[in-house]
Image (cartoon, rainbow over all chains, first blue to last red):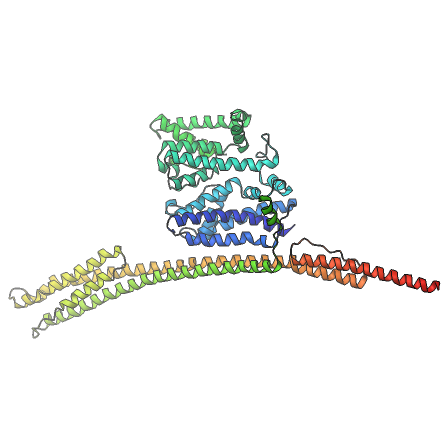
Length: 339
Length: 281
């Protein structure tokens, strides 16, 4: 096991985190040096130096073993969680060491669970960092790393095979070594597109970029306590639903739709089954909401029902209503589609 | 131009000196920056809470002084009421009275204390104004002085003391809260320092590992190879992956040993030829 090679590649992963910490610092400065500036600067300094350190001694290696590859994947994730908790822990507030670790892991794994009672009490720069952890983790810490490694490298191939699930690697007329590029292009393009759509729908730029990062990663971190429901906008609800659906589809499929400019790539059994499941669940949930008097009109019922079905099915976790009071049938269906 | 730049970057090598300087500088930077920020955060928290605690103490002192002044005045009044031979009323020190009220208002800690402080000031004013009735009470034949005291003045005096007690309790609660905040702030302010020290240690360990793997171990192996060559004539074949002066040194040693070996062979061949010529003669 070549420790030097592992250290160098983990350094790449930390540099990605450092880059987004730097963006968060810019957000803080843009907001007139909010309270998280010091915490972010310390975190950036520490993460950057820890990331760049191995590069001082270790030259580029193109050959890695399977063992080295596994260690790179595991340690990249773990150290991303560890360094990712620094801004929270150093800022303080409700973030004890355990809470900071929880928030960091939840962000990078795109889980979306939070320890915060009042999200809006956080400074904007910290909210941006929070959403950034979704963005980095949504694509995969190692996939970011793979962007830097040369195409022809055997290491890239090996790490791609380890990081991506077998379902992700199902080829849509693309060679394996192009999979990473395709995923990345689609991911960034969706993030940019969702950002524009949110802006057009009436969201402010800061909220738009945060929600774009969150919805693309199907993470669920919002800048508001009431999640998407805080905006009280049907347009924003529809934008969110669309991108939750698209983000939960295989990126290779999305890529082929844009390349071929047709919906033919969507005509496969997996996608058809998925859409059918969503449709049936949405109808059932909506009818249940209307029948139990939770919503007054059919429009509201279908909107809330479909939104939450998509949110649960895509594992995003956004909400536009308090579904803790929903009837048993609706709640059970939501849990089922979430599986 | 892009290819030249890429080529240049690929060929860019760091010398041993640069590597060691950079790595140690990185560790120093981490420790320095985070220590400075930790100290600044601690100072900021410390002065903020110190100011708050000082304000609390000032409030307590002002309230206590009011209480003392009013108690002393009350005793003087009781002396006049109780001892019929005393007919001089105690001085009503208006300036001191106004000064105490202003002092208490100025020692306000936060807005939530305002109503409590106002209550004390009003109770104090009410007590002092009621005490001024004593002159008329003494002159009156219809009003009993003692009855007047117990029915008019004493309730106001008790109310004043109770408001002062409430204010003191509120101030003490605040003091406790700020002490807890200070304690929490203290631990928070040392976290950046602790984190930096932790990461610094990690980097030191990493530096130690790299130094051992990339410099110390290769030097030992080079020495071992040289020793084998000199003692047993084994060819020097040690190679390692490096891009700095140490790998150049190793390449140099390799080359020297090969040349030395060739030289020795040439010398032994020449010796053999000379012997042969001697024997043939």
